[in-house]
Image: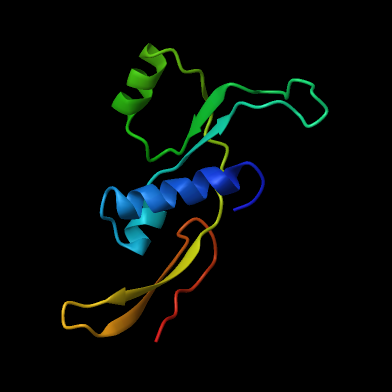
Length: 113
């Protein structure tokens, strides 16, 4: 993930894991969104701002509800980032283990030991 998607994507992954209890792979596989809503560093209004781009995995009913709320939806443009994650978790018995996840949208491999 890079550019404007980086903080948005990282927040979405953390929310998926902390608030929704998803494991690292589920959190990364969940459909993402990206909001284009800021101006350029020069103060000029950026092209295509104030649009919400949703991945194709977002249900049609959700898209319709967002549009009914006044959101302008852009096409899914494929710029939803890349993701890899290694987590260290303590099991109920007190033993620590590693887990890993990688992006289904790009080439990658998850390895942990």
